[in-house]
Image (cartoon, helix red, strand yellow):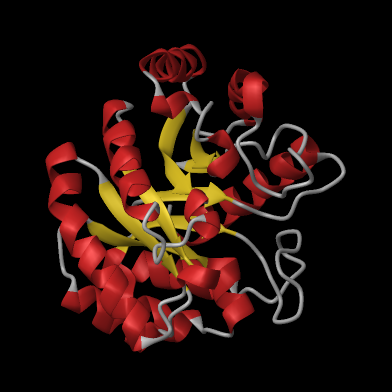
Length: 268
């Protein structure tokens, strides 16, 4: 399936590239279906912790109604809230537990944790602290039927070692191919190192100098990425998280065609 990040088909909120779109969130579902998207990956940040539909019974019923009416699945929940409340803060752990419970109640298959910026795992102390928190919630996630996917800036070998240390059937990777370009990683090294742990792929393009550019205008080696994914038998979701444009709906149409062409060449 090819999905799109929540809010990308509606006007930006507060100048943010990515955010929960607010009270009109339902309007995105018919737009996604009309364009041909199969799913939407929900996103939540601090500002939407009081209003996001995934966090209330009424909201979850509304989400279920939208998915049924428009045949657009929910790919999971991208937890951008942890970019604003990093895991070294005491408030982060109860938020994570609450989001796992809400994700399960909504029937979502996964939550995605951005281990970037203040959450970067590029030092041993942070790895140890976050690893302890992760180990403490993975069994709870398993009982809830929810995968916990990490989006990381670790080099391939270091990420592979971290996954081995915290091996759990509910732990996996969100692979953002644009971020990998931005960080200077090579898919020829990454996917052979941790490919079996990839359970969700963000389709994004970047250069080493420009973060998030329109698909096909950056330096991401998409054919190498999709070729490696084909080699490991990847059958998970793809979610478009590409650069916003003046006409986001037209851009989303082009981005979907870009993703479908890659899948046809390598994974069909």
